Image (cartoon, rainbow, N blue to C red; front, side):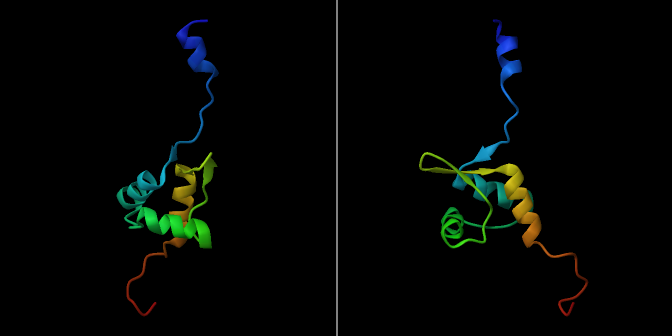
Length: 82
């Protein structure tokens, strides 16, 4: 098998980020400031982005981070009374 054939066999898995990277991604992409420790707490009590484990390492798929960020943002407002 050639190297090209091997890479053709690898599925396109979603990118998964560790907590520190996920925190940075949320800040850089969405402007949502959540520390890794906050993501850790949300993983225990609920209400945070969905994640998976690789052994003991929590991994956040980027598409789940995007879905969660989108779900906590409100529509645009023109005043605070709306």
